[in-house]
Length: 112
Length: 112
Length: 112
Length: 112
Image: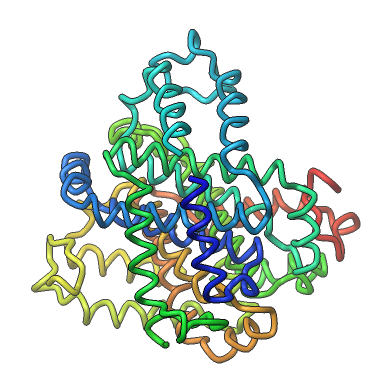
């Protein structure tokens, strides 16, 4: 991840694009790319969707890469350690969703 | 990243949640979490937004972690190597946006 | 619609909120409210989703009303006649999707 | 609005598309179209955005029409009276945001 994040930072700095980056516009880009992931699955029934997912791994990988790009860029821009934040969040979620209560059960923690 | 992805896979398998996961619903979750990142910057002028970003790094880090969680989970679920996909995508983008044409210039590649 | 749009304009002007409204922030609000509609259907299988839709008409009506609020407010703010725009768009779509080619067929017009 | 909603219902029934419509996929379409509205304002500073909004009224009108299309179609599909829902929601919001507390003040009702 660190290495990918460095490559992205280099890509941006080579093009002198940092001047355009601010959290609000980065968050907009993040949302627009997340929409493009979702667009792949629109109007597909369950079996169509599963079949499509298998046969379009490269296209969907490209879209996930775009989302990841903005996550890492936004973390860079705001000086957030997103791996540390993820581990902290997983620990919070492990408390909210204790294994004995949530095993095989997809209820929201407020309803457990 | 691989280690984070493994922790997420473990978190899910401890709770036997894989049965609920399919690409369409994962893509929906990804979009809902991306919205929560954006919500932080709504109705903020440029200076308010920059000030807010500085003073809310933990909250925004939590939201970015949630987006990253679904990116990695979706990659796991679809058996996509998202780091390889990201490097492939960066290479494509480096061709679309050659440094000499795009330096200091935020035009879309179709308009370069 | 005109009457609803007038009520919304009045609601905003009574609170002197027009000063905060600009197309970018309005478009962000529109997206956040659209997400809240989608959130209702997350993680629901087809039969669960249909059952939920029947039993939560008021809640979903509230969310659709929120989306409509921002559509109408944005149209007001930008001085766009959204009913005329809708009729123009329907006419364009009727050409893109001629009945004889698209009847019972949900393909995108580029694939018809 | 009723007349527009009838035209949309006719457009769909002429093409026998009702069979594809379910609340979850309609909500996805609603979100994808809302993203297209937002995309117009990405990476634009305040003055650029205002200038762009003036000079692209037709394009943005088209996108707002697309969002409205899915709002009305979803309301049709779920048998929701979206005008009544909007008036009910405005009344709720008028209580949440009393004029004397919220005039010229864009705080969320939880902070008034």
